[in-house]
Length: 145
Image (cartoon, rainbow, N blue to C red; front, side, top):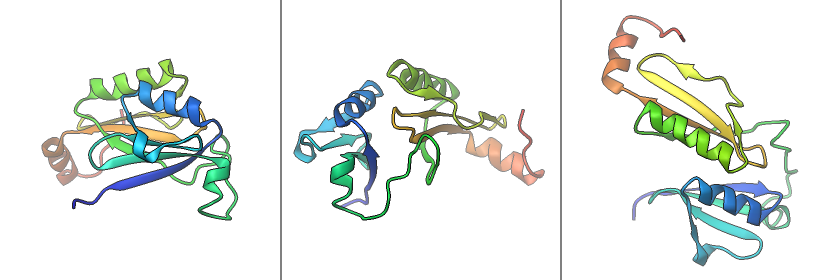
């Protein structure tokens, strides 16, 4: 079996969060979903488990940070193009998210943007031309445009 990642996120409203991720193209896996949890499939190897705060507390006694005022992780997905990055952010905004909570990045060979889901979790989307990156890095550190 190939390795998979299951990103677990505490959410204030499971239905609202499920609708948000479905609007971005994730598919709900009914096998891993109920009224307190939505198992969302982003790809064959990336899954997001949206957990109500009560369900989250079944896994840890640590406090749930307010993702709108603090950040513990930045999640990043690779895209096929700059345009795909822009389209992902536009889809997130249309679904109720916030565009670019972190600075845009444009190094020529690498382009990145970000969005927040309705609970404040930050997702970065990035595109990279590896051959151009290797060439640029051979000449020193990249400079942002």
